Image 1 (tube, helix red, strand yellow):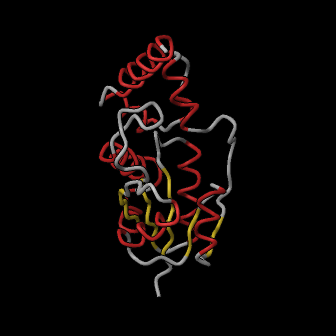
Image 2: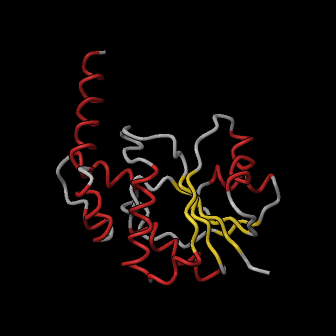
Length: 181
């Protein structure tokens, strides 16, 4: 039987910590389903990229930064938020192939899958205080070095889709709205 794992994230954007976790997951299973969470969200500071853009970034990064042939063992599936936490894991089950294990370091995701008695594996976390999508977005919006936190392929695609300008514009709109309140 094929051992299939599930790795859930928003990837807003994919950063080097995610890449390290994906490599870890791929070493433990025959197939990896990467769930692009909050796929219905975009053009927000917390979720600036569309599901399609995130899929492109993840796919191209896996091809160029990990190994092109590994894509045949990787499935990328966008999953929208459902608004009811208890139903969220069941909604995932409707959209993805069967899986044996969930890879996560998120305490809330761990709790939800633990309640269903699904095996959880916590990938090694590297440099968490620095390697976060929140930090990448903050650095972009404040004209600080963000490229050191992401792969060359991720940076290239963010630039191609005008992601830098988008994040800065959303940040400025949010900042102006706070001033007006």
